[in-house]
Image 1 (tube, rainbow, N blue to C red):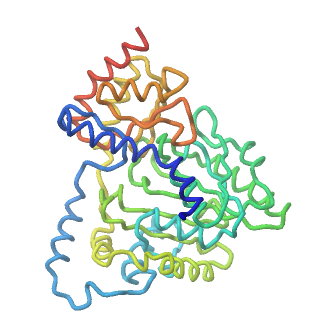
Image 2: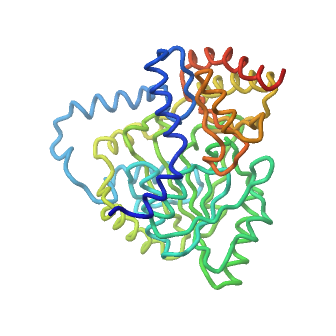
Image 3: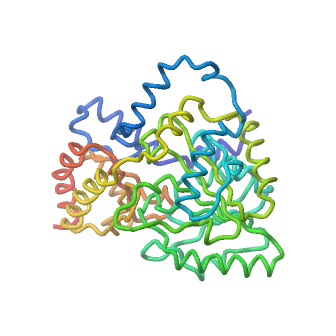
Length: 393
């Protein structure tokens, strides 16, 4: 009676949302202040002042046509603003015609994979990974090919080379990474570019690198991020303002296609077509205008750095093992017991909600989203001490 594929997918659906719902249940029982919910990357901070001012201005405007349809690619003036910022950041010209506004990065990825994958073709992704990636690839009829990263969560060049097959069409990267906070290094991305060229020549195929970059403005110690348009011949960037402007509920993002990508004009036509026919139609009109007015705004990464340091320093002092994240707002912590589901249950008994690592393709770990309030983080420290006492004493 229903879709067999979707019924099967439901059984492996996101642990993140499941824990989020658990948090809602616990809050009703114990009160918000006594529940420490680190389950979902839902920024607690408010958008920058430039965004708030733009919202006020646009919401009160009587400009004719503000709420009407526009091109399925989005307003040209918004795409020009984004293209100008990318051109400056990338050190290369990115035309506005290579930008498509989308309903967040999730919509952008679905549109991209629908545009580049034929049924049965593979898209390589690296574990740990954001759990929904598998479904986005599957929505387009593609097949996810999982490649394990090394002990520092960096991409292993040898494992990557071995994973490329004649049916490989795409490589999906996410840096800064969810769930680890790792930033993939220039040198490994350069190696990947060389490997891709070798394999394209060997198989007579073309491989597109899709870079999901919603955390590109939340970076701590790094001076800059690698520029995929400069490293890879065929590259697409998908981005969102959910994190950089703290607007997750507004669903606004974009797809940018490298001008170096072969037949990039035809690909843009396909992306705009799929943006319409997958039912997104166009990105929200008001939020597009907000983005254009606040194009240079961003959240202060220092807000998240403070939260990271409090939790990281406390957890490691208690005996937990964790690589210090370079970006994003997650800690990916090694479970003190082999089966991290047991640890997640222990944490839950102490009103602490974390997400099991197997939901990200790496069992034996758990993820903490530290984009919550300082009161929650500070309040959780005693709870983590109680939890640690069960394992390390």
